[in-house]
Image (cartoon, rainbow, N blue to C red; front, top):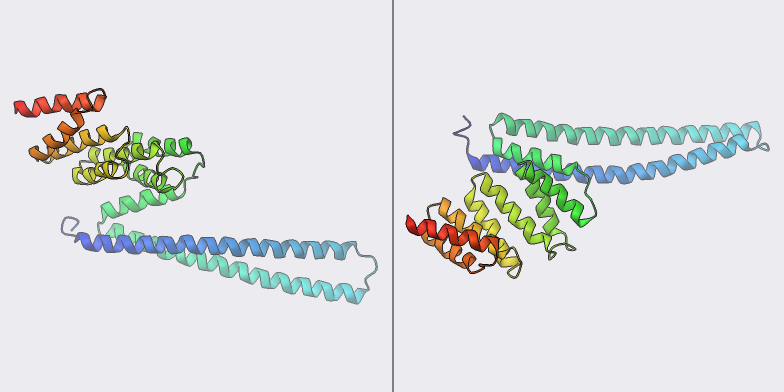
Length: 253
């Protein structure tokens, strides 16, 4: 059944899971805001209770009235806390159920991406550029390419780092992940982005070389030679030397 499963249905389910995941994240943010508000109210109640205990001038009736009011406030807060917990649990339950449906339908590729996205979402993001890059590179080196791609894309999207020297390197590594997975067409798009976005980057020769290698894997010799010849012009760099060697190999064939 997995082989016959329509990919567009898998994509549709993936979109629905992503939408629900976003909803869960937004719900969690709202709950965090409400939790902060509840904490403030609890602190005020604690202060009121403390003042009440310290007071030596209140009558028995005043103390009883104040105590009743405190108890009513606590009951209202308890109700709000229980409501918040129920709502979040309901959203989480719906998300888990939908994810199980994706798995049951045989959407292995979609599930793999979703699992990687959920794992990455839980990671603490370093504020330092080098530490963030190292986090993504660590996933790449462990061949966790989907997680690495998500982190590299996040790195590139950061306006502070988009035109940093690490950004085109991150894009190259995105392409390398696709290449290692045998997804050469996706790798071509990734490497091409280096040419378009960072045309003066020191990683341009690497992008050209790897574009040539991808087209060679797709048996598109004409396109492969064209990119390899461009890369070979950078004769002083390792990518240029590798391109020259690959060109000689192709010409022998």
